[in-house]
Length: 261
Image (cartoon, rainbow, N blue to C red; front, side, top):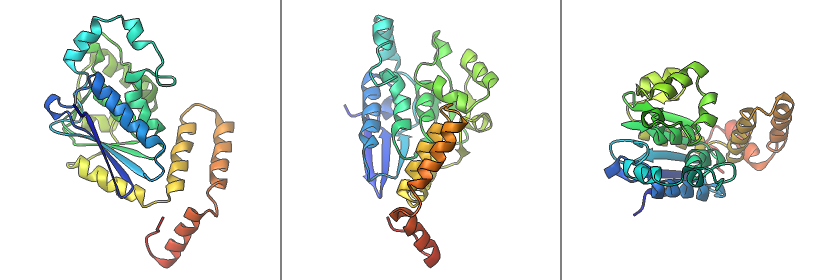
């Protein structure tokens, strides 16, 4: 059964979790489908932005309980330790693959983003959410630790004490609370529509400039050090100045029109 649907229109990839009857809970098939959807976009030169959303009553309710029970009966070392996707295993790649997609990813959260769902959303560049969306780092409820990339992504977003509080307690918070904590970029009553509108704005900017910006931010957040970051600033800029996309931006600004790429 299909778990994820991807539609590309006007240079925007709309990636939708379509397991609405289970509130898009992540089972092995869903994990494979999410990773496959992201992987297929990595080398797509036509896209300029991605909108990531969930069908039905919630963005993603976390791990599928039934598949979790089967997982608990297996050898955990054999299940989680193999590095099947570069530095990550399959479940970690559910979130991390979106950082590999070379264009901005905008997540639209509604209903719930629990556990695996919250970590999936963290892989996006930008997260829009309905104010009443419930968020939680769920794993402590099951006697586990977050292991889907969250511990790579959350320290860039939250203070250490906040991360510890949410991780130790598994207590849910609203997206309105998450905004102040760094988990949510912007609140909106219509997250999917606003995510699509934002993606349209991004798609109207220089394609090469936007991709360079995402690469540069990745370097800046990697802990590479000032020397590396300063060098990459200059290198990315040198690759943009005077090139066709930048020249079209200049011409469009001078002529008072939208650029055409």
